[in-house]
Length: 187
Image 1 (spheres, rainbow, N blue to C red):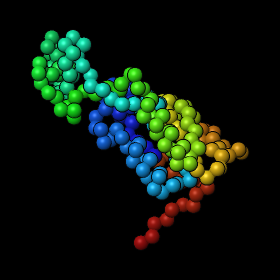
Image 2: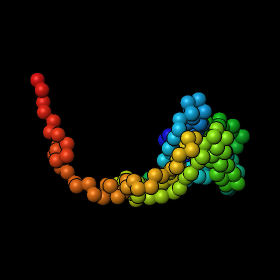
Image 3: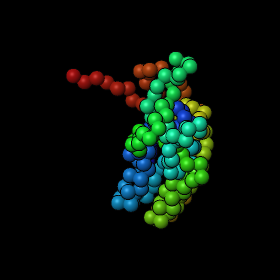
Image 4: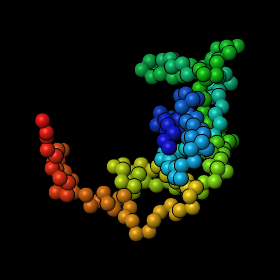
């Protein structure tokens, strides 16, 4: 399960963009409830742990709503800022600049975990470097495994992805492996 990370990532300030995309995790839950897969894996940015309700950003000087409209900064013409609503202007929710409610950080993530557990899944998660799992990046990511079959999360005796990838000999594009049969072209 890979819910979209752009709404939780630190990149671009983590500004939620579309309500429907931000809530893709719930589609995963609906699917899990319907199909009951034995194992569910989730990988995402670690900031998803802070997934909670959103509130409207207000301008500290005026108390008015900050919109998603981008305008040139009044004194720095090369810089763009979000427009503050005019006095009395009613801004539709889809055009309000939304930010996570600091008082309710993690509330939706915790509810997501509770619902998985309520469906009979044992859930484990951890934050770790993606390179530890074989990805070519040192970024920290959230890794979650949920199982409903009573089996252990990790089998002893099996190598970790990073141990295997460290032993793979680099190859040039198109070069065949000694272990793999050569591909032949048939007409």
